Image 1 (cartoon, one colour):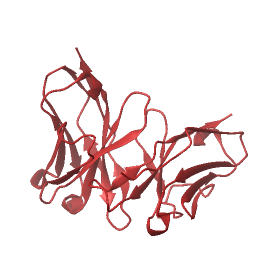
Image 2 (image 1 turned 90 degrees about the horizontal axis):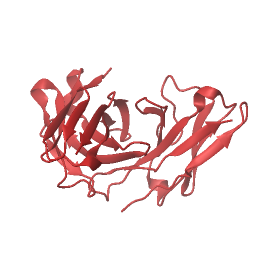
Image 3 (image 1 turned 135 degrees about the horizontal axis):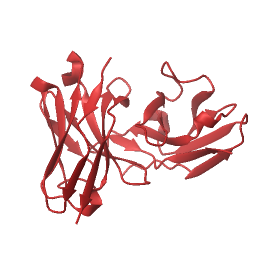
Length: 109
Length: 119
């Protein structure tokens, strides 16, 4: 079965840049999406199609992909960015198609 | 814009049955797959499966196959997740979300339903 691998945790100082990675296979044929989940809240889409942002996502949050690694970058980190982040792809070879990463907890120290 | 409103929290006992719901507001509800996502206490998101409201076709994550049933009623714009016999390990928050089919990502989420199962 298809697997997405994320680091369990990332820490960043306020004002600095945090990088959250998502590893998979055959990424060239897949689009990667990212969700942010703050404590006690439902997840929210923050990046779709590798690097596009829905309205409402601050420009400080951006996505990219290179080879078999997708990256979510949080620039000039703020306390409000502290959350869990999940990557997701569509895998046509899986019965249920939607694959979620294990999630990364971003701590703004 | 779509809004997904889920049913309220549930407290059940082991062995009981349960059906929770997710109602959409938009006329287009029928045309998008709905995903059901489990979040156990302190854990990450797990995709249980997706269901198409137009015909109730469901595709399950093998980890959840046979454990739950997903369905939908297009006339009421509602998707359902049900259990025939709950276990304590079913204690979790369950989210529904709309799968946008041009990129296959979840663009709208319900607020979540907390299910607590005790022995």
